[in-house]
Length: 313
Ligand SMILES: C[S@@+](CC[C@H](N)C(=O)[O-])C[C@H]1O[C@@H](n2cnc3c(N)ncnc32)[C@H](O)[C@@H]1O
Image (cartoon, rainbow, N blue to C red):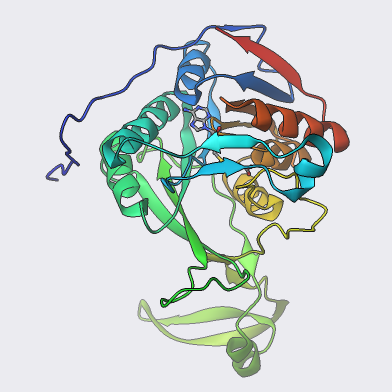
């Protein structure tokens, strides 16, 4: 297949040198590392770590400095959580590309990378992902649809993010657990709640019959309706771009097995780490920011999650 790549003036292939990790143990349930996500992924790969899921939720090229919100302001004042300001789109793409390249190295053959993005830059990241992961590696675009307070805009309300999933090795069987969602009301009305069985005549599907066995529901689709973290919800950490635990639990549950390793090189408030621990997976979280580390540590302590800090140089 013809390879298509993105180009922009002065495109540089940013490849941070792998960090060096002292005291990393692959047995640890949850490890926190302060540093550049790409450099730490490089270090994990050189130590032979094999992740089944790498979840990357980078800044979204908003041009803003994101500050902590009400929940953490009460506890430790308003502070800069992280900056999402770049000299131009090219610099931003180089930053994300470095994370993708390093993430690929740490993935097990049956592993997946999930890149969380939005519709303003998601199309660029999809092409970058195709470049880094190669033909056949892109397997799903999940639309995370949420409801939120309406914005003042002469446009349709933006109510979704994108989760782009790439597999490490398209020739390997990826880790994937089929899950189900409730049947559509119209399906249940027409066919009832019983499992459907297709009738095949001469190799062709002719019609379906309803069995006595209860239906598990419809296989989970790629549009997920999950609530955002409510401003006053108990889940709220005060981190400005915190993702819902239910979203991360669904990813971890469908794409990994108990005992597998989940790595999040841009962990923010540590949502993926908590999801991984609750589901019996091991996790490594990396972030450059002090606020991210502080809020993640507080969150894990409150949830009773044992974690280890790993030094990175
Ligand atoms: C969108 S937030 C992640 C939010 C997180 N998923 C959550 O649920 O709280 C992005 C995070 O990436 C971090 N970050 C950005 N670039 C990074 C890099 N190269 N290495 C490590 N962390 C990075 C920022 O400090 C910020 O905390």
